[in-house]
Length: 296
Image 1 (cartoon, helix red, strand yellow):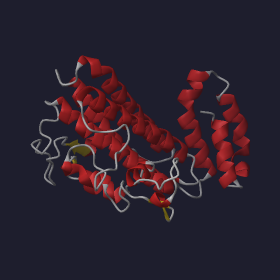
Image 2 (cartoon, one colour):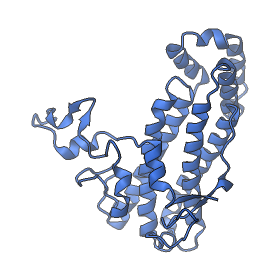
Image 3 (cartoon, one colour):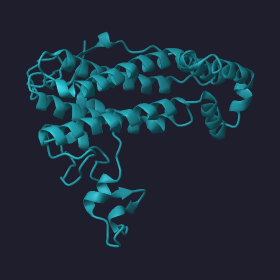
Image 4 (cartoon, one colour):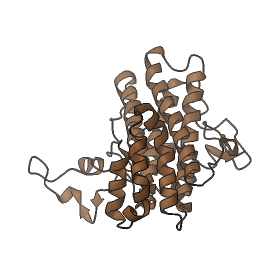
């Protein structure tokens, strides 16, 4: 990723950005000339400093709030996969590379978000603020670890189904926060993570379908009333929301009324599956708190 490209994109939506950062532009060029490893390591901090100085009069409190929300979700996923990997006998040897790769991505997302929040003048919410109950049995008083998914770390198929739910929900969460990051270069990084979460979802769905016979597609299958194809009715809400995954309306247009490639009308399944819908922060928190996430 080229930082200068990001700066140019910001200039398109903020005509004053050039005047704000022009004295620092040469410095950014110098950063990228030190070598790829140094440049990549310095990039988040250089960008954070640049934005903090350029927008000193408009402190990005809302942006850091969004990033802390994302960080909380990444903590959840990182801890989930880390526990799965470390649970002896849970993940088959043939699938270890998949699950470890996802876990490693989530760990990097945590590290990056912590650095981004700090560089923007915010304080990353510490993981010690939370306890997690991956059995979905949490209460306001704390985790019970005896919820409907109590076999999540003893039965691999339950683990994968819960993983699919987390990943699908994560994709919708990042999409839901995109409007709150418009006009801020952080949006670029949020979309980078969003795309990786979508690939995680496809990877888990691939494992469930090709190896274990689950009736799921690499994408959310919208043939059901609520588009929940995980096989777990308890997570219907993760596929619902103000704009559910099975909607066929986009921008006021009913996609089923559009002609398909064959010239006929587009089916409900095709129309719904062709688009992915967001979930709001409040909708996400209602799904995860206190069932999966509780305050420590």
